[in-house]
Every structure is written in C-alpha cells, then in structure tokens.
Image 1 (cartoon, rainbow, N blue to C red):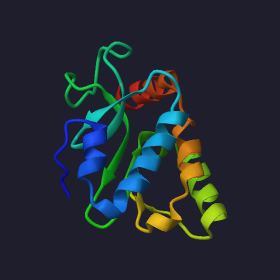
Image 2 (tube, rainbow, N blue to C red):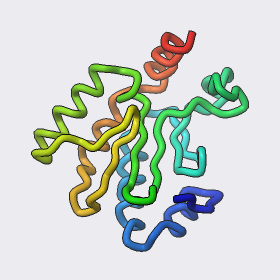
Image 3 (cartoon, rainbow, N blue to C red):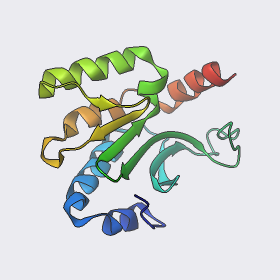
Image 4 (cartoon, helix red, strand yellow):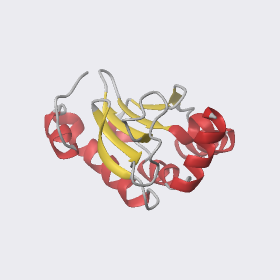
Length: 150
C-alpha cells in the first residue's frame, strides 16, 4: 500500500482512517525513545528514522546519496509495520524483543528480518516498541553497520 506523502504528518493524514491514531501514537513513541542523533524523514515511501549525512557522511552503502536508515514506520496492505535494523543486525536485541513480546502479549511476534507486523491495532505493544527504539544509539548503529558492511 503506497501512501503519497512528502512529510510524516502528511503520511499519517493520508493513511487509512482506522490506522491514523495508531500510526500517530507509534510515531510519538518512537520519536520520544530514539536516542539523540536519529532524524525523522520520509524514507522509501514510509516514515523513516535515519542517521543524517551530517553525522555519517558515507550514507547508505546501496546509495550513498541516501542517509543511513535505521527504522521505518508504514501502513502496509494488511498491517502496520515497524522496521527496525537493530533486530536484523543484533541477535541479542532480536532475542530480547521476541522474548519480551511473548511475555507481554502471550503470543509470538509476526516478523520478517527487520519487520514487525502489527495486524491488530488494539493489541499494539506501544511500550515495547518504545523500548526497542531506545536499544541502540547512533554511535552503536554506525559501528554495527560498518562491521556488517565493511
């Protein structure tokens, strides 16, 4: 589901009405928990949280003109998605997230490599997404990214 938007506010306004409140709340939780240095932007047609070129001039190895991505928030066809590079790149954070999600919800998370699929709007674990957002600093993300991508 592609949402035409040039800003995070516009993205949420153009999302399906039944998802706007949840997207807005997730955005607020992420922004309030992300460590200093990450920047909110539009990235890959989603709300993105990146390491700006002012901090990491090398940018993203796939396209150095782009800032280094870290998190994204999106309304997909059948779910809201939170993409988080820490759960993809750091096994300890992935293990923590899966165990914490199961303890909090009683269910296994519906996940891809970096994607957390949130299908039930009334069951989104906002506090846990906030904790996940705070797990890795810009400095830690850059170091892990460089280690993995040489």
